[in-house]
Length: 240
Length: 240
DNA sequence: CGTTGATTTGAGTAAGATCAAGTCGGGTGG
DNA sequence: CCACCCGACTTGATCTTACTCAAATCAACG
Image (cartoon, rainbow over all chains, first blue to last red; front, side, top):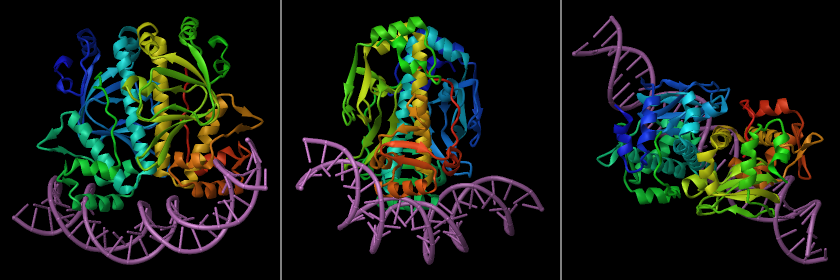
């Protein structure tokens, strides 16, 4: 499929890219690859000669400590860029793993330079995406540092639901929700046991429905209040 | 002082910028402003028409919850960029405060666009700095999510000492260390009382000396081992 | 000197971790 | 077809880390 027909671009949360730039992106994309769930997309501490866009599926960025403790830094959804840190800083300090089967649009490393040289609008967009990703990280850090377990989980579910919807993954008032409770625990800095108990509380209070791999929000307003979660509105994002 | 004579640029951890680009930066910098300790540089949730570089002093980025809980997202040291998120995403989701008296190099918002259009190498550098800042955030998130209090404080002190040294702030084997224990607590997701107790343990074990606003590392190797902290080497950074 | 902010100390408490079983459901091989 | 296996989820009991509350000390400063 050509980039101009990319279904993601049709979504209202994504911003239109100039036709000339779009054609260039199309020309630079040298492959579209599929990987199974659980595949390692990036290894912690290694460089890469690829820049990728997540086209379909879920992934996550993570870091681990020598003794095996793992922190999920963020979940990746369709439209997210993979590996900018590795490209610019020579190595990625984090790993990236596929949570579901994924489809990636692959670009060569040299593309990044060419992009800055010849396509300033796209270069701006890349920086935009980097800033956007940092903002998501800031949100999570606030959660992990200063929210209690209930607030934390509520905030994460609200954020993921919103991001998934805006990528077009909402269906009948629910989204496919691939993370296991262990993934949520690693993202929130909690134990899986505790995530389980907190999740039951949210379910009992009718705030969320999470079963059979699908997530529905029972009462968004109440859930946001529980989380003390107030998302900053953001302008539509570009898609490289 | 002109940018070409900027003492930061002389440091080995900063990368040289092409003379033409440097002259352009110099022309764009329309002011250098001083602010006292405690000054609010950015207000949470507001936009800005300025882009700034921290030239001297310490600052920090933070977010707060409605009930007043605060999370410090990161400390800012000389050479760090302020307000990229606000510029690209229309609003900054975080506030920025001066920890000491600071000197800022001020640029107009339009500069950012012109930079992408006419100075691709500098545009690349801006993205580099954004990626670098995200990487620091990833480190902190790993700490707050998965390290215990002792490891967390040790990792933060190692990181801040390294960053301060590389900005040329080391003197006689120590650095001026302006954060209070309350700041450390807000950065680490701990209470001030607990930070105090943990700090005493690090002092007692001879790992750090922190008194009269100065920090010295007693045994860097041991401190890193305590923190399970392994910093990824990074290429020299640009300075906009 | 009184005030204010930072640090320190002690006592009691609570949120969440750890440990240990057990359940449930789907897939797999005999 | 069925036994079994494995991963995810659930539950209960106990324990620890770090929080909260409260008060004392200390230094800087007007």
